[in-house]
Length: 620
Image (cartoon, rainbow, N blue to C red; front, side, top):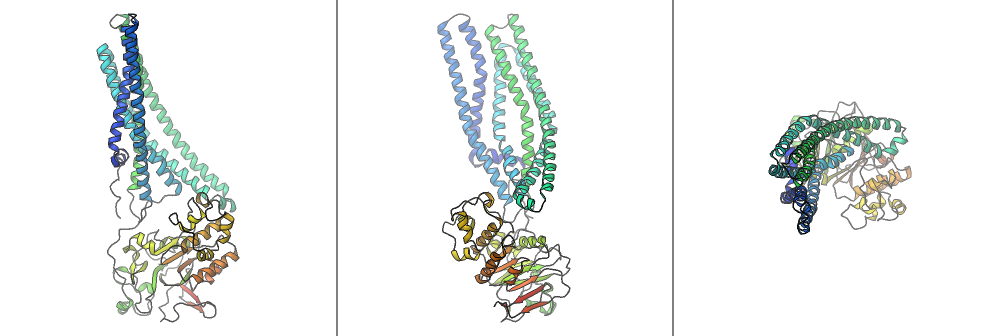
């Protein structure tokens, strides 16, 4: 399995959020401006104290005007620095979060797919909540630097007034950092559990809403509600535990800050009463005491905020570092011809036994020149196409150019898995899936997945229709021309266009303005608009009426495209050139009815019969 590129640790994820793409300079500038803002805040009580001592108590109007002007200047610096820092931080944070989302989505949607499978709800939590928390480290780092600068500035001012006050501030700061670090340790574990429980609840909710109509139709609404209540209850318990830890943590931090403020105020009052400091200096110390108390409370909250971000960063790192579902492609090696191995396997051996060098399925050179795809069926090692079948035999199915092949699965699970295998969305063993490339059969594992999927398009049974217009749903977001009318007719989609209000009508989020049958027919039309060599349709008409299904079946048969139709529908299978029955069979048999269907390979030498049961009939 190939490892994830570069960003695989929480530390690197934080680096991506903070300094990647030139954001380091903006972060440094924003931090500097926040430091200026913090020092200006510390200067306000100092200016007030000086004004009291040098203008108010002496009764000097000119000095009062001067010092009030200086105080206004401090407020101006304070405001401008904070506004400028906020603008820079919004940019740093926003682009940092975007980078994290792009990274997470690119790893989830990588061509070789991720071994860490997620539901839509889980994906949503990763790319929203977790990326939000990790990107928020920019604000935390900048504001923490400003907080420490404010504490240092206040301490230096107090040192000029009273060394005792400075000692109190320094001791309180160290005590806060040490105590808060100890108290924050359980928060990381509970924060991780909170995010995990929220992810599971979100996944259940998303799955529930996406299949709401089906659940109601089959009477499973109560069971779905029960599962969501259980998942949300677990999320509530985890969130409550994390919230209690955070509340206790903040209470400790606030207590230390309040104690520091009280000690500073009491010390300043005692010094003023003893005549050691002036009234203005008393005002300055009291103002700085309140400022330092707030700073200490914020500094104490930093570890709690940090551990929550660490928990999310670790979750993201696991997602990013997940192994690929498929190994990296090796050098392209052609499959071995059957004539090269007949001395070993024999002419009458089942296809699955006639294996070539390097594990490739053997392919006839003469009669099967136009075979464009081969795939294994059965429950042998490494094959999941029909994993729910009780058959112990494995056979090779060959798809010829221009053939409409029907595959009848024993159950819906087998149909979905076969669709995933043919679409290279599930793991396959070497030799289980080959495709013709430049006249040569090549194992799917020796092709880049994108290259394979350009040649073989396998639409899921429930494909997703993104928000947009009906035209975009059929032709894609980059196709501005109207869909091809003959392909629209083949999918029996004309009535949908009229009912929706034309090609520019909005289909709604996930195609929710359309019925299930309309969404299926859009999927058929979208598949037909692709330029792939092979199209795989998984129960493409299960939600349409019988008349429409017959129209679609006849139109597909007339297309001349190379099709694999995975279905149990007699109407669809009756329109196919050949039907492969994946149901368990002890004796491999081939049934042909020359009166109704056409066998595209009838003029060729027959290939050895596979272990699956096939039916080939002549089109009338």
